Length: 396
Image (cartoon, rainbow, N blue to C red):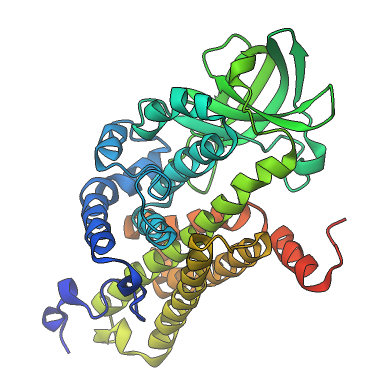
């Protein structure tokens, strides 16, 4: 079989949807997903590796993202959670960094406003948020607080007449180097409860410094945030963000988005590894003609399909209002573990070419590490699920 005889543009199962889960979408949703796929292929994939190598965000992409209108597909546009999940998987498949940018702005930030702001606040803020005229970020994690931030939030808020005074620090805040607003969670010194605030990044006392030297999601502009006596008017205190239990309403939903990212990252690994195996010649034959390589490709596909199947069912439960926190936790833990295995297999198939971004797999491999850790570590999500099935908490 010669290299010239291989039709690289028409490989079987090109979409990787081996069990046809997309057929569960309505016709309108399938058409919209195809439109978004075309956009990602034209506007995102061609620039993804270069932006990642330079560690720079393509600001010129934001107006194009606004035009394709991806923000809040369920609440605002009436699509299903399955559609929203598949869109997030496809965005990740094109580039995990751009998917993370949207996950922060659309999921964490916009989700906080939709879930925790009053109607008056939503009316004032959401039009600019939906249109990407205002870019948002989500400030929860702290320099000394990650998995324990629920009970260990150190950033403080103090009521002062018609204002709140915020002091503290946040870390790993995506988009924060260029965002217009950040939702900041702080512990109210009055009642010791964690509350949410919409903070204008131009306010005196607010600073954001880019985190350098990352090996994962390099295009995402993560920042260290410092708040020094930042004065926030009372109107910008989220009306329904009055305890960490309220904050968790947002995290439950966004944890699903990260699990969908794990699906997309596995599909990306499959795309690159399968194409490379078919195209690359060794011993006078395509790599794909060797049994062990086929076994590895099938393992990557099997991981992706099992992860997708779990997420399809969870999206259906979410649409029915029946999804539980522990189900989101299991999904995040399971899909990211499968993802880690898949990207490692894909990197191995590419051999030495798997460690340079020229062949894309090195970027896919590295980006998976961030997805594995954020929105709750594998260990914490495992223990949340364990608590649900035993009735005993092993977290502390």
